Amino acid sequence: MDSLVDRFIEIAVAEDTGDGDHSSLSCIPRQQVGAASLIVKEDAVIAGIGAAIRVFHKIDERIGVKVKITDGETVKKGDIAFIVEGPVHSILRSERLVLNILQRMSGIATQTRKYADRLAGLKTKVLDTRKTSPGMRFLEKEAVRLGGGENHRMGLYDMIMLKDNHIDFAGGIKNAISRAIEYLDETGKDLPVEIETRGLDDVRQVLEKGGVQRIMFDNFTVDMTSDAVKMVDGSVETESSGGITLENIRSYAECGVDYVSVGALTHQVKGVDLSLKAFF
Image 1 (cartoon, rainbow, N blue to C red):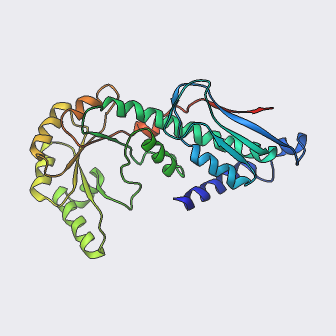
Image 2: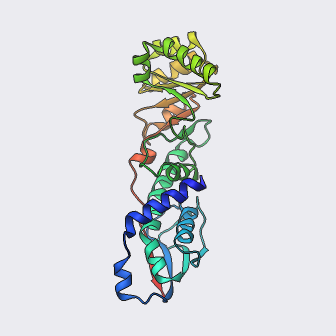
Image 3: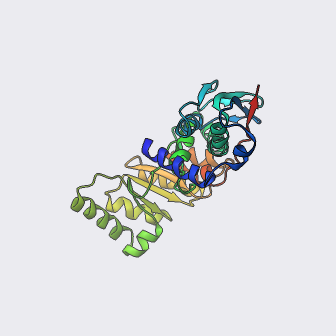
């Protein structure tokens, strides 16, 4: 994970800086030092403090950060999350990247907290998906965790997820499962297998075949989900996906599914309004 963060920061800094921060170079002496505070401008769940510190230190180890609010905490408008002190040029080079990360991650954490709160008292957990910003998945999935959700697979490599296209290209549910199991035997890989179902007959086929650890109910109605959970009867994990909103998530969860996955946690997010302001 640390190597991913470092590579991401290097690419992002190169993208933003090019051959130099000419705005700062043109009007601020190179040796000038100063301080700035991160000001919260709306109520939210803060996320990305740890990543921000890493950015500051990657750009200039001389920058000091005094953290006042930690990742995952609820914040109010007007709160100061941290104060940075050090070379002004370095602080200004860091500013936009730090804010981009914090605003995006805090937006995801805030959104996730809303969904997680709707599941209070139930066993069901809210999951993210792979609908993430290219290059930022590891940060966005961390934000989901900080908001009270759980992560689905990180990528294509840590779970076998047999979706509709896999099933159709493989010639059906049972063929897809058989080939997945054969693949695991041949490669010696130890990966969980999840399969997507599009109706109750699909669920029956999966149960007849066996060999999977989780069944996804894709775009099922609440009534269909309730019937499917009864069919599975706890033999494997269950997950609802597709069309899940803040308004209906609890209805799906009350059917008894183990997980509800929500793409909107990461792909329909409004960044939290934050500002890094100099002070003297």
